[in-house]
Length: 266
Image: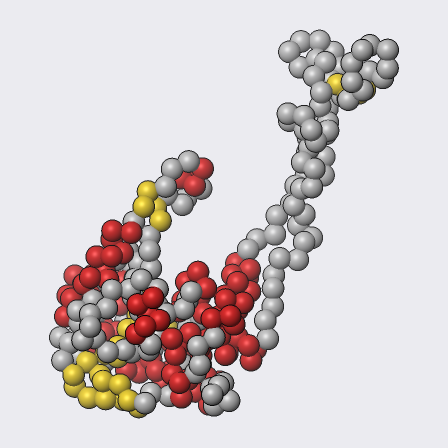
């Protein structure tokens, strides 16, 4: 399987023979499983104080007062006589609080993880799958998009935007800008104010400045080929992200993917 190599102006300057992982069959079920397993590795265990909601002087009045036997705060004042210390009242304990001992980390087999990564890589070369994810691709554009290693030296955001326009990906960049949404409510207090869609992914073998340039454009990410994971290629467990490869990045993919040919299913 061959693919064209372009320069920063969008001109074809050669071709490259792609490895066999680009022929891997599409397995969205395995990609979904591996994605959610890897996502648990970033979760932090959390628990609650064992006495939360129970630090009170509340005690039941018993029978004979014509009132329910729920525990009530002793004394007078605003709080006196109010129910406390149980789960059904305001300010009471949580019925089943989260515990820090709970196992939230999920593991996945090595071969299954490699198959998911290989399948996600192969999906980036299928125009139908990439378009199904929502990316705007011109009719004349062939996938995968491979560029010479000059892309790794781009250090200015303006130069990177000019590059995307030269390869006719301006519509996809505009789609990401229009997808930005300002949230309201609790999410704004927790650092999740802006929701942004996912744009093209840049895969390089060496980051000589392109990562910093890409960080200033919403939705565009840059990752080293050796660190490529399913979470990069299939955000939200949906494969088919639009990827721009540097020429040397294909040879720097993890060796198990390049050497093992039994990942390909017929």
